[in-house]
Length: 233
Ligand SMILES: [Zn+2]
Image 1 (cartoon, rainbow, N blue to C red):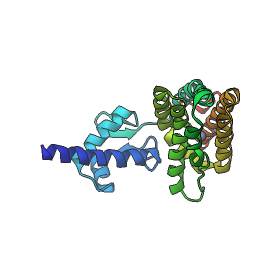
Image 2: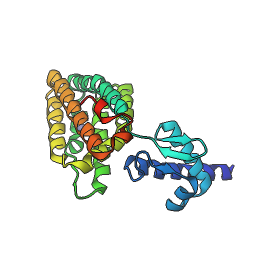
Image 3: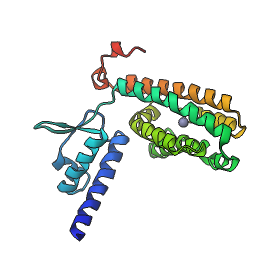
């Protein structure tokens, strides 16, 4: 019993560490993964590493290569387009609902998150900013009173986390993003549902452009899963 619990914990630790390395691109998209090497590099046991890889395969962050071990999945332009299409359906609606019916206190509680910034010279601040950014968007949906909507938005933003990370390394958009968040925060606090919907939609388009730019600049066409000529942008 105790052994089983200990094994589960070691796998959890391995899972969290490997997932974090993938989400921050320390393990880059497309890179080959071998159990023994990962165990050594991350100072983990091989059994927990194997368990963690199994979970990362289920998450879609890692794929199995028959007889060759594992590989970090690529960032595909089709995934980006699907995620942004869905964000565009969900988030402006969430912001509109928040403006119409969230309590003033629940929006004011997001004041600090709306002011989150990162320092482009300090990669450690990227991760913090990405988490704050995600919490800001998710909690707007929570404030709107729809937890299923909030959960869907969280999943979408987590799926995009690797790309957000990459896009922060490319160009300093810290104050640009903070001003976007403040505009959204102000509109929702003012109870202006139309403005909140519109601002949210514009910002998702803006975010899509930032992510696509970083994909094009950051990776060779082969890692995009589509020839550059077919990107349609
Ligand atoms: Zn944002």
